[in-house]
Length: 341
View 1: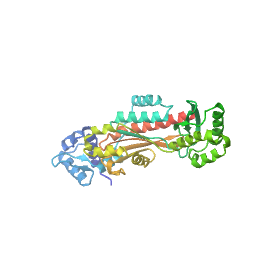
View 2: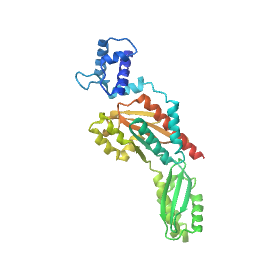
View 3: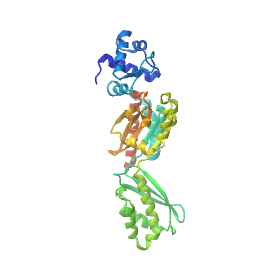
View 4: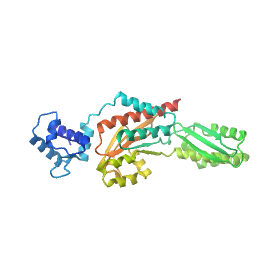
């Protein structure tokens, strides 16, 4: 549905004024903010028509109007002029994230923490899924006579570790044997290949070393399986308690945040680039009074994961979208650079 130019100017002004104030917008206030000269009566007529068309809502009989979810959708898709991120804001984001560049988990945690702080919303991020990744590096670190830590890094930057207790003492010969097998059977191979069948076949081929070595490879299979699962990083959900728009719905939202599988599905439905999901466009009832702004990051040209925010529909979309877009691009670049070192 296309609106006329005057209706578009009035809708844009109402959305932007309501985002700033949180109060219903009346015709007198609009007269002062519109870039065209229009009478108060004409504005009231246009507002009434926008209300009948579903772009505006009237919370009280004598009050002004506020945007509906349809009004926000039209504004974001057709009317919004995004604010350019300042050089100072870019430096702030870059300096904070570069300090965590060597550790993908900490980097994503810091990205979420920054988003929550800068937006006043709940920030969410997913770690990369390693379905198409290969094993880049495996390290065995003895921490006792029969205890070792195994660390695995994948081609998408995921680092996982697990502690293993062996039946026999970890001798230098065992450690060397471990690395020989790792270099032959694991390094450069898909993470998804490391499963129960592979480990059973491998252990069966070890002969006299099977009893001593099998615990190490069982742990390696476990951390490989962990790397295949996307994890959710959630920061700042308590920020939503300060948004009065949620009312009693805030309790449902807080419970929803505990259901990480649903939250991950909501994020994974996002496409490339920045996506704005408004109100009932969200797939879950608990988010029907919320907006999500989600952007996907790539690692080495391949899809990595998603970063975004959840907040009220009354968000400053024009300001937040460029920030999320820049932050997401930077996370992908830093992760890519780390893997190429």
